Image 1 (cartoon, each protein chain N blue to C red):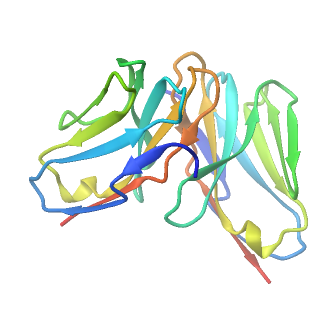
Image 2 (image 1 turned 180 degrees about the vertical axis):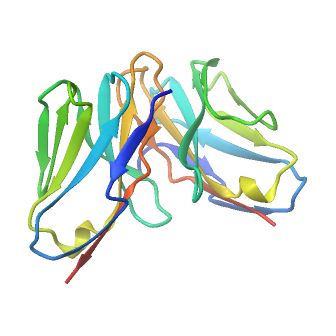
Length: 112
Length: 111
């Protein structure tokens, strides 16, 4: 157990739907990062939050959004889902921007 | 735009053999990470390389960093079946904080 908790582990949903992925960072970690892993795109950075504030954005689609709550857990919202959104979504956390990263076990999203 | 390239993408080797995975990155990097991923599983941190000339070893794996050449290597010594996995390098270019990953090297070690 890495200390970073992601739920759910698996999610199957239909095209056009909306889902929410949840991440609880390791105790004491202020930063949360979201990554998408797909067969064709590899591992891609989506977005980072630090202590509740958005810090950096990567290749995140407009249909996707995220937030970090006062208790530091984060949610990634994916809407108007398409087949191509099927992927493994990882959350990672760190104490600060330069202290290494701990990854959660991921949420496998399948869009049918 | 930072690009990170790994080679080879796939590596099949016999137990007991040595081999090296290469990781090239395109711009100045603060740190270089190596991760291991088993199928369908999370990313396990192997090494964090902080400066030019850094070398770290853990068991049969040794990682090094040459910032002038923008190259990191992961050397496998006397491979065993348990090392079969996908290995990723990732560059952290600086205060931007996010990781840019290479495409991964899928390693299969045959008994």
